[in-house]
Amino acid sequence: MSGKDRIEIFPSRMAQTIMKARLKGAQTGRNLLKKKSDALTLRFRQILKKIIETKMLMGEVMREAAFSLAEAKFTAGDFSTTVIQNVNKAQVKIRAKKDNVAGVTLPVFEHYHEGTDSYELTGLARGGEQLAKLKRNYAKAVELLVELASLQSSFLGLNAPLLISSQSWMRESEKSSIG
Amino acid sequence: MLESAELYFNADHGYLEGLVRGFKAGLLTQQDYINLVQCETLEDLKIHLQTTDYGNFLANQPNPLTASIIDTEMRKKLCREFEYFRNHSLEPLSTFLTYMKCSYMIDNVILLMNGALQKKSVKEILVKCHPLGRFTEMEAVNIAETPSDLFHAILVETPLAPFFQDCMSENTLDELNIEILRNKLYKSYIEAFYKFCKNHGDVTAEIMCPILEFEADRRAFIITLNSFGTELSKEDRETLYPTCGKLYPEGLRLLAQAEDFEQMKSVADHYGVYKPLFEAIGDGSGGKTLEDVFYEREVQMNVLAFNRQFHYGVFYAYTKLKEQEMRNVVWIAECISQRHRTKINSYIPIL
Image (cartoon, rainbow over all chains, first blue to last red; front, side):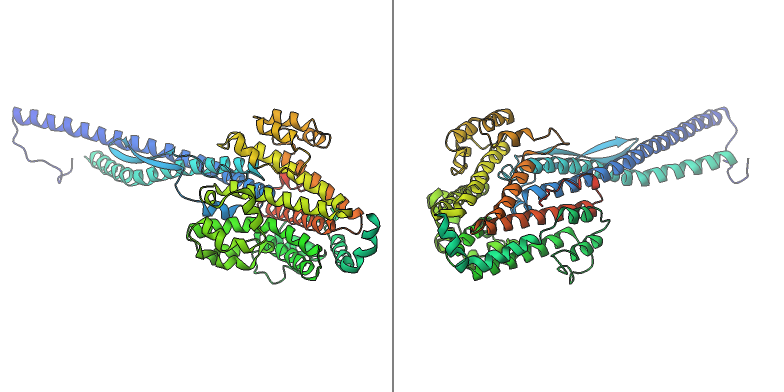
């Protein structure tokens, strides 16, 4: 017991009961802090693992999609100007939801489809099959990108609370180990 | 009569026929393709192309060479050659060459129409237009507000006017989906071209008519295949089929009723020319698609056109073969630059 952390108290039964209650409260608080830090760390590790997997998959999917673009251009000619000129409403949209982990709110993105395909008849006379494959590949790429974005924003959102709670836990452990 | 072609053809068109045959001799051979496929980078590809007829066409390009730069430069070269033919030709070869330009003009007009209606800058669109499809009224397109305005003001002067008048009245121009308009124009165009060749008679008709019949039937098959599962109705689909092919009239009627690939295949089985083509289609991702099979047949017919002399078909055949060569080289270039070499040999061999 160091001199600085001494609490001045009048030695009586009541004071002892009050002190015991305070001790219990402090211990519960400490355990809760540990649980929070653990939960955040667990979630953090899960997100990190998923980010790595998704990024590797992303590389593959983008490569596949770029190649199917080359295939479509081989059969259908250059349709890029037609496609760019006919852009109006988005077909794939994102909804943002909130998820709660040990008191920290994290954003989660979810994609949904709306509306019909305005490029249904492009490539009607040449290359329609390749264009359909191209659309599917890029749709997969977009969905994967949305998932990656969701994971990365959770990562960033989790980073700060995790550091804070683990630092508090460290300080707490230091104090209790000295005391 | 056959004799007249041999007697009078060379007086008007002999020089150009000689020239086009010379160009044809410069097309990339199988050995060239083998060399190109073995290149590791696009710089290697450029060096190999320097030894062919292409020469130093990529000499002045800025350093990061991409497949689209190669495509643009090759297209410019073809355009120069074609314009040379067109400028030095006499009638009726001039009309024939104008007919050939019409198909590119149709694509350009659709692009311009679309852009003008969305108030995009005309200059940007002009850059994207196909150089072979240039016509003098192109810059004036931004005057028009609606498609019918566009038609009355500008397109009436171009060679495309009869195709517009054929397929629709001016009021319906506004509501029509742009792809359906494109296909209707193409249908009128190919029927007019076919009639021109047939009326010309002689060896030209003997060579060009089967080629154009095949093109018409191919379009009918591809439109049918691509319209399964879309909102295009059967009646609409039938109006897009060109009628100058072998499939007219019974085959086209049967095709309009087809609902899946098997029914389409059974229509093709009635025709001796198309049955073996459909049988050559592999299934799934390993084999050839219908489009590949059609491209191969087109290349075959175009190469055979060079076996006869004294006809205009050589110009058509040379242009189409050159375009296929461009597509092949760009395909190989993309496979090399994306380092995706599994399908690099799926180009269509020409010679």
